[in-house]
Amino acid sequence: MQDQTTGSEFAVNWYALYTRHQHEKSATQILANKGFETLLPLYRVAHRWKDRTQIVQLPVFPCYTFVRTDLERRLDILRTPGVCWLVGNHGYATPIPQQEVEGVRIAFESPARLEPHPFLKYGDRVRVRAGPLAGIAGILIRTKNQYRVVLSLQLLKQSAAVEVDLAMIEPLPTKTVSEESSMLESKKTA
Image 1 (cartoon, rainbow, N blue to C red):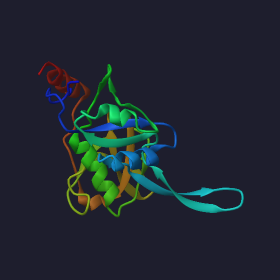
Image 2 (spheres, one colour):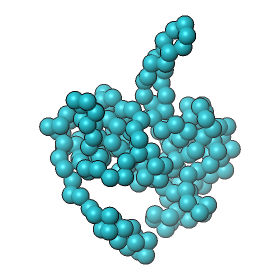
Image 3 (cartoon, rainbow, N blue to C red):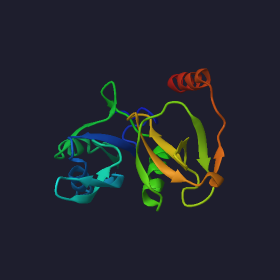
């Protein structure tokens, strides 16, 4: 199998794995036990039942976990209980850009609150320029009196939002839809 971004066979990249419903944690743990580098961002939420309220940790991206691999052990990944398939296009596993995964990892490991957010295609692109989240880029939103940067994984069409201080962000140049599509076309032909 050939990697779509580098063109080299068996390049080490991050990949998204689609899992069975509520099997993200167990699949991630089994993959880690097999020696794979994994990432499963979780967030805390209070769930209420009739008789009690309990704080639980849920995946930020439901039914997905992430693995860093060269795909030589692709069958070992796919035979992991709870894993359904590697996310991709036209039968090929598609690597997730390193900067997108690192943005999610930095936000997850920081003390800032990370939570799921609806995927956004348009909005103001910003970069955090200071603090523990410095360097991550995303879309700025405002919820009540709090500002958040939405981190998006394009391949999954899913996003997560992390709270930020407005003084610590800077705008990124905006691209028109035609500029973005011409950039995508030039990447495809290269």
